[in-house]
Structure formats: structure tokens, C-alpha cells
Amino acid sequence: MKTYLPKIDKLNRSVDEQPRKWHVIDADGAVLGKVATTAANILRGKNKPTFTPHLDTGDFVVVINADKVVLTGNKETDKVMSTFSGWRGGQKRFTPADVRAKHPERLVERAVKGMIPHNRLGRQIFKKLKVYAGADHPHGAQAPVACEVA
Image 1 (cartoon, rainbow, N blue to C red):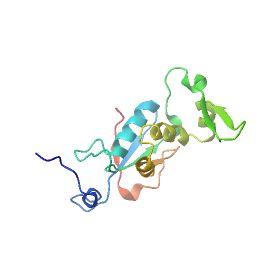
Image 2: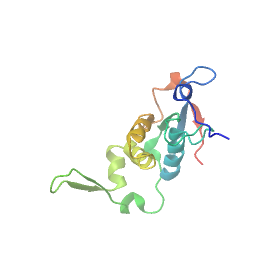
Image 3: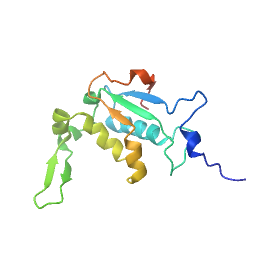
């Protein structure tokens, strides 16, 4: 028996000729890791029977209320995140509380980015993630489906 491999041109079309589905995840009061896991699985297409690791089989994900996401334990103040520019003295350290104060969307974006492949495919998949701090989003015309956080 041969292994089924979906055709790339067939992946972008379903029976009703819509390119990809849109999902909305409400992060209000939800744990950051669970929101990120749910979003990453939908983005990669792991919730579909046509999932193929080396192809982009996933759907679009819109995360709303990213400013109300919850971190368990003392991670809000004790966890230390850092970036490095490559130059001497170019390392910056900050806590999730600092990130939440300036750019609350980046908490969710950073968590999801760590759960998808770190290559060209991952960069292509990451472009399908839309994160908003508030409850409003401009993607109502795509008729997104509400998605439960497990």
C-alpha cells in the first residue's frame, strides 16, 4: 500500500472552493501554553487528516484578548526572557510583565513561534497567525470559527 501524499494545489482548496479556514481563539483567562499549543496545531494542520510534516496544510488563526492571557505560578515576574543583537553588550533581559505592559501580543506570538518549525516552512506558517490585544479584529469577512482551548 502506498503512502498518501496530498497534492500542493489541492491543499489550498476545499470542496466549497475556499482557500483555507479561519479559526478564532479567545485567550481571555486561558493559560498561555494551552493557547499557544492549540494555535500551533491548527497553523501546522495537525488537526486534519491530510497533515504532512513538510507541507503547509494548516489554517489561519486569530487570537483575541491576548492581553488577558494567564501565566501559571510566578512566571509573570520570575521568568526571564532575553534577546541578543549580536553586538557586545547587546543582550536585553525582560520579564513577561514588561512585555505585557508594552506589547501584549508578543507573549502569544513568541510562545507559538517556539512551537512551529524553525526553518522556511515555519516562517511561512507563522504568517498565518494574527494576534490582537483586544476583542476586536478586522477578519470578520473571513467568517472565522470559534475554537476551544483544550
